[in-house]
Image (cartoon, rainbow, N blue to C red):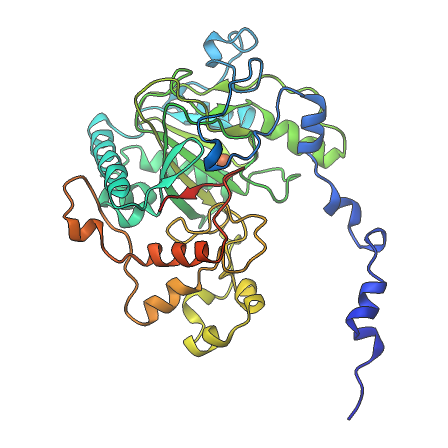
Length: 413
Ligand SMILES: [Fe+2]
């Protein structure tokens, strides 16, 4: 029997793998652009992760990025030509290029908004009654909306029956991402009074020196939004400043202040994935609803569709490492299953964000997905054995409840 060459011995590899000898050591260790953003902008800090035990303990810090207002009321911004709600494609293009977002006026008509609002509010209440609501630092999320109402199917495909401005919306996104873009998720984000603001971040956290976006988020307010109820916080133009700094390998420097986006319900706000943004604070006692519909370059996914194609016997014998490598592990917010896996960033245990049990349940014909729920749902519907309950319960039994933090949410029992 031939012996394995010594160069392949794990101890030998480790002995030659000190950090300073790594390829791309500097690039991968760099925390830029956010490190230099934080250095030069001390009021822009990440909100420390909150556990449910600290719920409601958060205190507003005057002068922070979230202590702001809408552009037209902001001393720094009020005279600048920030994005306006419009149907003019040229203006939408220039707002996207200059400011990193644009607002498509009345992309969803008042009648279309009313349908979505009713469905969101009913579903949110139904999921609370069923004990499967996902509590977030800001309020509540409804995940995997496509299973929870026809209007959500229409939103994802920008069907004019749901999105009257669909053709214009699609044109802007195609110009930004190229053809054949795909949707990464559709989530209803509900901000409630007492919720904490989200940390400023870029959704596109790869290829930060890119000259055009690889991800886009369509934010659709279903209630009017402004500074009073948690209009999304953005730093206009930050998409360009940050990507230029990365390309030129220079510090970001002082950034202009954040504002709350203001928009009427039904406006579609298209944001460049490189734009600094976060959920604002709802100071009112009415729920603030924004539909988050992320779109991305089609290359940002796996070539082989392991979720469907792997044989059950291979899945059953697969090591945690093989499962993770095929994508059955939610290690950050990049993929979830009906919301399970949100906030799994930094998890040490493979049980925490494992998604394989959903697939195995499906193989057995036993995958019960959460569907439409409302206060009118029957007891049987509310108490059904949703696979989501089982998987979350199993993760928790492993002592791995999902932390609440940056991009993190918590699924309530
Ligand atoms: Fe985001």
